[in-house]
Image (cartoon, rainbow over all chains, first blue to last red; front, side, top):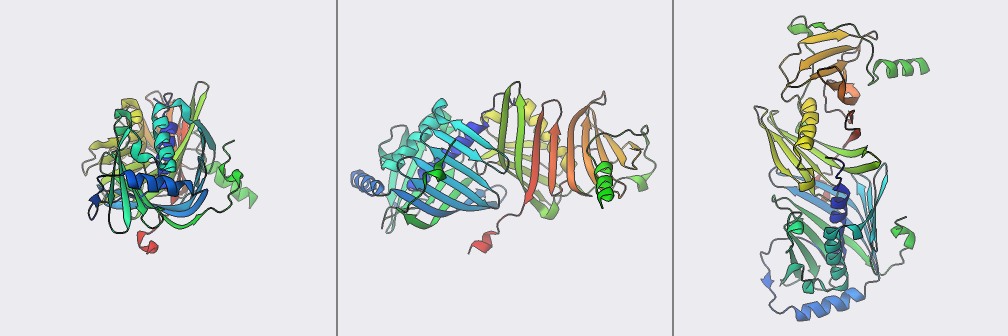
Length: 220
Length: 218
């Protein structure tokens, strides 16, 4: 059973999904939001503002909500993004774990080892990668692999992304990304699993366009 | 100090030691003191797994979350660092096992059976209420043997009466799984665990982590 080791791909998938977050993310109920029928204007604003972000540094708090167990697992860390496709997610507490995505490569580092993954070898990962790129470019609402809808309230936009492909559907039910209307920054990202559990990632203390060394995103 | 350190290592090593033959357990007072309850009702481990098949090696990590209700029903959830659930197993008060959730690539009967057995050895699920045999090795460590549906489970105690190893063996006395716990104590769910699968050639290490208190965030 272990020879067909696909777990690294799942880890990579999680990373890809997270990548969508940097661009703009958060998960929430649709309560209090109203649908945006014509997303063209939002699409344009998204693209325009995203193109202005050369780099992003943020603290994050991740909360896994386990519905049946009525409990949460919380972790914290640092998130880094650098144009065009470099991401570093660094979990700092209560465990150490680093994930770096750079182009088509990904590396994960835990307490003991590094694991390098070529994302181009997995169709599912490529699809997830496309979500990420579309989020980076602000074109997520045009991605035909996913059904995307947009909602708004007074202060936020909420993007709801649902996979069309069965392989992706098997991995997650939907992703919700919450953006600030003020500056289109990602406030929260959420991934919903089939079983009802979901994981929120809240981004705080964001700093845009600071100088980030390329060494942060080294996948070698 | 060096000598005492060496003595500690040799007496509590997870290697099989020469031993006297198994004999019957003599009465209720000699039953080992094992507390199979989940410490504090829930425990979270950082898990790292390493192994290989032919020339291909693998390594992955995640979190193992174990929670009990009324010290009887138990759930064990393995998720990756990003919160994605790999499997969710449960046992009810009658030790009946159920797979609540498992991802496609792991949904293989042999793998589920392997993981279930590892966890049941630690949680005392499916074990007879008392061991049937015991023996003492040359270092004074005692082993209590529980018969399983297939093979046996040996629970090994040091001279202080602390559990330091669980070994699952085949009917032919060949080791299948060895679990070492540190520090030794009366709870199998100790602070660190090392689970070695001898046939499948992979090892999982568990290190207890202290979860972040949600109230501390506000």
